[in-house]
Length: 229
Image 1 (cartoon, rainbow, N blue to C red):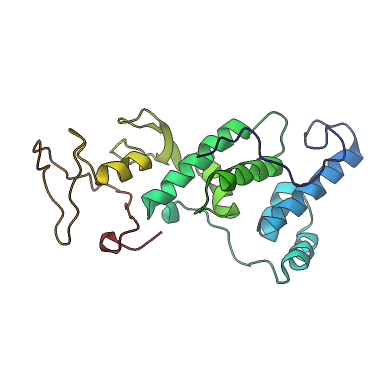
Image 2 (tube, helix red, strand yellow; image 1 turned 30 degrees about the vertical axis):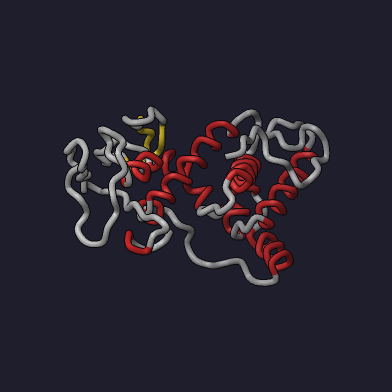
């Protein structure tokens, strides 16, 4: 993956302090919020999310969305649970990437709207086929803030990753995908075939069974292993 220190901003700031919350000029603050609202809407944010992050009136946010996209902003409640992420290990892998980007880019005077823009632009620059849209990206750090998720330490690669508190197998989504096709003990490839999965490694005899307690579904691009995600 390509490294990303700071995503390229597509909108020129009014002054060097416009992107910071501590700017003492009212006009800079207002222009900064309008810039954030415009960019968030361009990236696909709903009117409600734009209003929440920038303070823009929802009516104005709806008009902006309709002007840019030629249709009304989607209605209804925004996602607020982790069920969508837990259906697929690849989604959790992308959620972990977003979480690490958020930790790196949040703060430093950035407003919540600017942080989300920077995180999402950096994420989409790194991923050719991103699985998370702007709304799903926004929800990842909120799940941690609401204590639905917490950081775990992967026992295999040592990476910190976000996941529900009651997952017993401390393995990140990347290692889950990796070890679906390899033995955890000897790293030998595990032949994939239709029907019941192999119970033990042919080389070393290690059990290949995984914990079923709130197990994250591990899907791949091969039709024999479940639907795509």
